[in-house]
Image (cartoon, rainbow, N blue to C red; front, side, top):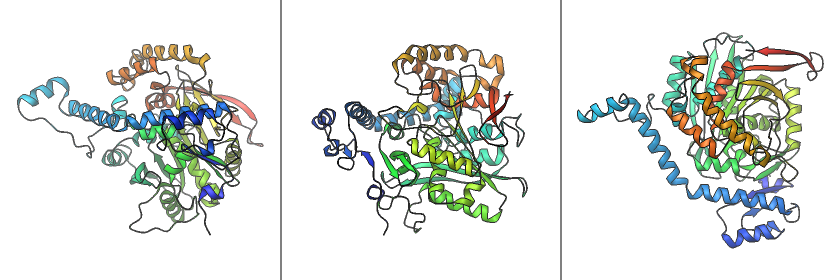
Length: 482
C-alpha cells in the first residue's frame, strides 16, 4: 500500500499560515509544543522547538500572511503595469501613443500574442543567444541556460517564436502544470531540442521562476515547511508541491495518467525525456531555471535519483540554476553530491552579488537548509570565482546591511556606464533603473533579476578550479574564462 509522505516520513513540518489568528500566533511564539499549534503540522515530540526556531517559524507565517493579504492587489498591479508597458511599446512610445489616441487607432496588446512581453522582458529585452557562443565551449551551457531560464517568464507564443525563429531550434512545448495542494496550475515550464545530428542532440528543460508580482510564488520562497524523503533527506515542502508531490501518495515512481487528471511537472517532463532517450541513446538534456525555477531544476534530479532513474541520470548533461533558493538539509546535500559524482553530472549554481533568494531559507544551527553543487559567485564587477558558499550566506545578518546598501547604490551608478563599456545590448532602461532604486530600501531585490545573471555569463571573468582528472575533486589548475 502507498502511504502519504507525511506518514512515511519520520520527520516533517508543514506550516499552515491561513489556519489561525493572532492568539494562535502568540501561543506559537511562547510555547514549545508547536505540534498543538493551528499553524503547524508535525509529529508530536519529534521537533525541537526552541525559541529561535519558533521565532523563525513565526516570522515565516507573518510574511506569508502579509503576502496572502496583498495577493490580489499585487497581481492586479502587476498585470496593469505589464499591460501599460506593452501598450506604450506597441504604440511607439509617448508620441506614437498620443497620435494613435487622437486617430482612434490605439493598438491594444494581446497578452497571448508573441509580441506581448512580461515585466521581466521589459527589464532585459535581449532574446538572442550570445553571438560569441560556440557549441561545446566552456561557457556554452551556462550562457544558453540563463537565456532559457529568462525566456521561461514569457507566454507560450513568445517562447515558441523565440525558440523557432531566433534560436533556430525545435520547440517541444510550453506547459502549465498542476499543483495538487493549491489546486491551481502554478508551475510553468517549456522544453526545446537542439538536434544538430545524432551526436549532438540536446534537450533543454526550463522552469519558470518567481514572477515579480506573484505573491504566491514569493510565499513559497519564504515557506519553511519540509518533508523527509526516506534515505534522501529533508526537502522544502513548497518546492516539492510545485514539482508534483502527490497529495495522497507522496512520490510514487509511476502515477496513473487520465484525460481528466491535470498533468504535474515531474512526471510529465520525465516521461517526455524518456521518449527522447528511447529514440536516441546519445541524446543529452540539461535542466535550468531562475529563482523558484532554479529550485525546481535542482529538485528534478533529486526525484530521478530517488526513483532510481539511472538511464536518465546518465543522460543528464548538467543542471544550471541562477538565483536559486536552498531546497533541503545537509543529508539531502550529501545524497546529491554522491549522485552528481556517480553520474558525472555538471551542477552549477550561479549567485550574483547580494541576491537575497540564494540566501533563503536560513542555513544555521536553527534551520537545516543547505545548498549543494558547485557555487559560481559573481560580484558587481562581474568577476567570478568558484566558492563553497556565497559570502553573507544568510540574508538577514545585520553586519552585511551597510555593505548591501552600498553595493545597491554602486549598481545604480554602474547602470549608466554599462552601455558605454560593453555595448548597446547592455543598456539599462528607466524601468530597470526604477527597480534598482528599490534595492536601496530592500537590498538584494534588484540583484535577483535575470539581467545581471545574463551579463555574468557574457562579459564576466571567472577564475575556476578544474577537477583533477584522477579524483574528480582535487583542484589541478586555475583558468580564466572571459
